[in-house]
Amino acid sequence: MDIHGFLATHQLPSSYAEIAQKWFTPLCERLLKHQKGANKPFVVGINGCQGSGKSTLTSFIEATLTSVYNKRVVSLSIDDFYLDQSERSALAIKVHPLLKTRGVPGTHDITLALSTLRQLDNSERTALPRFNKATDNPFPKEQWPVIEQAPDFIILEGWCVGVPAQSSAEVKAPINHLEEVEDPLGIWRSFVNTELVGQYQTLFNKIDYSVMLKAPSFDCVYQWRLEQEHKLAASSKGEGSGIMSDEEVANFVQHYQRITEHALRSLPDKCDTVFRLDSTRTITEQDIKQ
Image 1 (cartoon, rainbow, N blue to C red):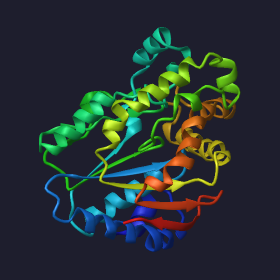
Image 2: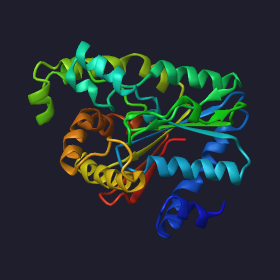
Image 3: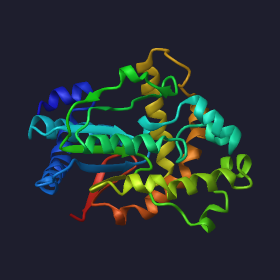
Image 4: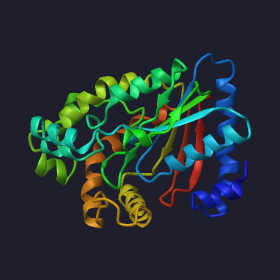
């Protein structure tokens, strides 16, 4: 693989090459070992909080498996299955106003996600949904990339990928200002948790090998998400109304706090590979189950 081209494309420092060689190339070798002999696409799930490096890791795995090992790889983000603004507005009216904001379980089209995986499994011609965060709506369907044959690997990445639901008792007490003020009766968080019990677990159960980029705590999320938003603002060149101010980002991440903290507690034991990050997103150690 042309690592220098990869670094340039993703605007990464040269030090990323050493990180990838140490941690991610061996991960790709493990994935190949597990995929060997599979008679259907091998699904890799990647979990990590916002800004943890999921998208970059996904791109590295795809580039390595494609260019070095001649494998067909399809990359999907759970973000690409967000409902559009009008659908979320309808949910906000019907269930709770907080559902207007994309992100939590209940704001994705999981039926579409399952259908997309099923089509890929069946070697059908498949359009891959893509969501435009700058406009806060999906890209037009005619702009979705189309896959003509079954891939060897499907990568599904996302901040809540693989996360189990909480118990109803755990959902009762608010954990931050947003929940306390905007969801005092717990209607929103109960709805989100109920959604997470259902089709989301059906989707997550399709994962054959799970990877986690584990943040040291939720405190890092605001800073990491802020960096993402500044990059998005720079790349979108004023397109759309989806770019958030720093204050809006601070409010936005509170929507994710409950499930992110639950993931940090519950998910490492369930994952096949866990990369433990420090506050600068540097990997300090890894846990490998298989």
